[in-house]
Amino acid sequence: GGAGGAGEARAGRDGGAADGGDGGSDDDAPELRCLSIQSHVVEGYVGNKCAIFPLQLHGFDVSPIMSVHFSNHTGYGSWEGTVLQGEQLIATLDGLERNGLLRFTHLLTGYMGSASFLRAIVECVRRLRAVNPDLRWVCDPVLGDNGKLYVPAELPAIYREEIVQHASLLTPNQFEAELLSGVEIGSVKDAVRACDVLHARGPRTIVITSSALGAASVVLLASTTWEDVASSALFAGAEREGDHVRFAIDIPKLEGVFTGTGDLTAALLLAWTERLPGDVVGAVERAVASVQAVLRRTLKHGSPRRELRLVQSKRDLERPEVVLRAYRVDE
Image 1 (cartoon, one colour):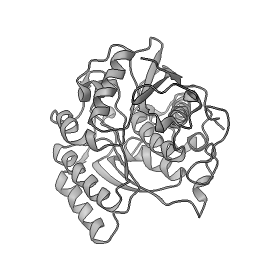
Image 2 (cartoon, rainbow, N blue to C red):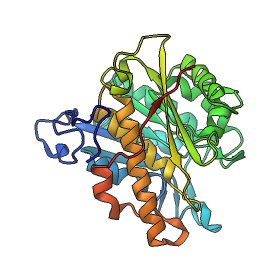
Image 3 (tube, one colour):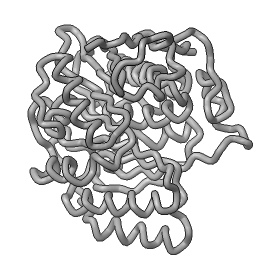
């Protein structure tokens, strides 16, 4: 399995070795319940179809709510389906609340198809935290990529003004980080500045999941608190300066366009940050390792429309072999 930063398997919160996928069956483990609110497609793997299986493999009970219900992802050029509105999310929450079912340890959010639905997420978080103040929210602010918005135009402002401050972990790509922070990212220094702007609004961990800062690689850059790297070998003995630490991973570019990689990354970051408390570095390395293994298998298979080979990658989702290591980013 993929070793940790120091090369040893550490005990995860689920009672199993952090590198193994077997801990989730431990009857004495704390109950991990995740409400996952994002898109649904009948065919293929994006949104909740990318998130549910990996989270279940890591011992989570997953309760999905669909923000849109489509026949297939929009990369096909043609699709049919329904975009849900905020009142439908509130009605679903009402039903859960009346039956005492809003008992969640985690919230995962991704693609939102309407402004009213995104605004209803704030009410959702308020209700969930009323039941569990320690709820961890991993927010993937899906807005677009490569300078192109693929959500309604009013969504970036709603994220900036109403959403970001409530999230525990934020997973934007470079374009989304620019939209949310107001910082144009042309260098690692700019990326760090964007993270600082976002930290100041609330989230303790920010992972810019992909950027164009490397020539032959996609650069992932993460910024988090010292407490969240207390068990990370990468920062062992590091002199504590400032409130946040930064690290990056250079990810080799693969041929082709894939859909769902951000959704999968966010789900795996939720799983691994839970299993490796105090080791965000190890969590990010494992999430990246799993996603890379899935992409390589997808490329090798030649899947139509590059649909991710998720089910066939069960072992890589549970026990990723870490090849790409994080390195410290000094300001």
